[in-house]
Structure formats: C-alpha cells, structure tokens
Length: 273
Image (spheres, rainbow, N blue to C red):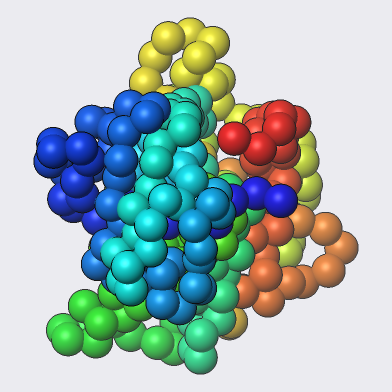
C-alpha cells in the first residue's frame, strides 16, 4: 500500500537547519511536519511511530519518511529517501467551464486524480455561474482547496496549477498562444467527426529538447459550447473532438478526456513513484 502524502508548508526544520521547501532535507535528516498538515497527520489521522508517510513540495520533490515522534499537531519524520520526479514533457491542462452546483469542482477533482497538470476556470457564454468580485476570489479558493486535496488523495508529488478565470475572449487568445508555441487545443464537442484518440498530440519536450508543449482540453458548461465559441476557437487553431457515442456531463467529460490523453502520453505505463 502506498504511503499517505502530505504537502510541505513553508518552513519546517531539520537537525538544526531551517529551510523553506524540501530541498535541504537529504536522506537521514529530520523533517518536522507541523501546521495544518501536522495536525492532519497527528490528530485527525492519528498516525503513529513507525508508519511511513511521504512529504511533497508540490513541484515534484518527494521525501519518503518514517515517523519517529508524534506530539499532537507536530510529527517528526526521519527522511529515508529523496525522490525528484521529472516535470511533464507535455503539460495537460483542463479548461473547465464554470457550472452550477459543484459540477465544475467535481470535474477538476477527478481530473487532478487522473493526471491533469493545470486547470483553468472558464466563464463560457452559457455558464449559469458567474465569478465576479468577492465570489470570484472565494470560488477560486475552493478550486485551489479541491485540487490540493485531490493531489494528496492521488499521492501526487506535483500540485496542478489553478489559473485565474478567463472569459471566451481570453480563451481564444490563450488558444493562439498555445498553438503558436507548438501545443494543441482540443475542444470536446458532441458533433465533432474525429475521436479524441486520433487527435494529433504535440511532440514531447524530451524528444527535441524544447520547452514542454501544452495541450488544452476545453469542456463546456451544462448547456454546451455555443457555435460562436466553437467557431472562434477553431479559427484560433483549436481542434474539435468527440469522446464517444454518448454525451457526458460537464463534470465527467474533462476527467475522461484527461485520462485518455495521459494514457496516450505514456504516463500510466510505468510504476508508481
């Protein structure tokens, strides 16, 4: 069974040294997990001495540790191994239209678990939900918390980026930039002729030494993507694709698409980190 994952907070301590992040903790050093994560490990989950846990920095660095001491909300960990997981050679980003209820949050939660590298809130034409002012800040905070929890659930060492919300004009501009830099933008649409499995993907960075290209997967709201939006995005270089013979909910389409893409990119071919 894989060890539970905790996200490092700024600070931490080890054998008389202090640092922000995990880079200063070699094998054999002591890392103190405190704050909210320490409380979650020691008080909520009641982790005990001798148990194995992983601490990650959200940027690919993982400390494999064993618990030496538990003092309420402070857990002392002995680092047994340091693992640096490589950055993705193709960045897979879910552009999720804002949806009513918690369907958009369900989408980004599952997408994070299956391997999305970033998520973008999209204020689509047919989005019933509108992010403005204080609501925008609070809603994005919920997305950040959702992605953080899903990262830990999936035992990931990399925390997906959560961008600020964009409207369709912003998405069209982002599409132009991604395509111009060698990436791809895929709009999921039920009337598309090409299946997602056949859409060409960009060349991974490891193959040509360039910066990692990005693949944007665009998912519309409950009412679907408007014809005007599809036209604007395709004119900017996006491709349309279908997932299969059935129409999926906005909370389902993104995670399914991300899963198919990361499989095509070979991420599921190896063993867990």
